[in-house]
Length: 339
Image (tube, rainbow, N blue to C red):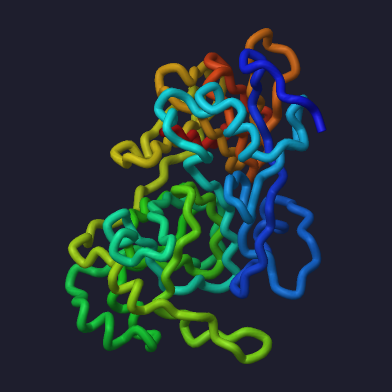
């Protein structure tokens, strides 16, 4: 394993995916992104692209820091890696996943800070954003309660498929995004492959698993009481952010999430050379490739780092100025995340 390098030599970091078996896992990671997945009894449903958790530490795969874990470099470089907006953090604040849903996920909710304080037991708040990479025919997203749904109706229908009638339901379209604030009841439908940007939390409360059982006939645990404590019944806003065309002759940037205290997300349509800097944001940048590869170039312009569809690169704050160049023959969609 290499030694740590001086902060002024930090560079964009790529990571080894951490694959998670899920009862609802699909085949789009392999079919759409060409991933070679481990052979498992239970299908792979999640690829954790960037994770700083005790039980899931992302490993750097490029450059002199290859072999180091994300948590190690966060502790060593601190402000140089994270930026001045993260001075009080002792771990990376975000978790990046790719969700591959072969069948629909459970109907679930994540708590906010207030709900975590009431529930206790190590509950962590989680707000997240989804960007749809690919979707099969008839795939859908369930996000938030419908305008007329009541708490009593929800409780009465939790163990029935009719509970879907109480939710906002949307057809899945690649390029669409969904902002799922903590407290939003939601489910990802089968046939979706999506990028997920979220707070660094693994707290999920299931209210329904649609009657699903595993190979042994066993149902997964539900958390109805904690879920009802977490659902924001006042929020009935639509979580959907409609996508824009990925055809562009010049670079375009579109805000996806810009009013969230936990992260900011932009959709960049990369048609030519793009100059950027971490200085203005005061934090690291995450750059996720969606449909085409792109190159990240820093400092002297030598040895660009190529990011392939599905991958996320971490640009440390100390890098400051960098540039992006599309590496394919089409406009590259880049999801950029900062704090």
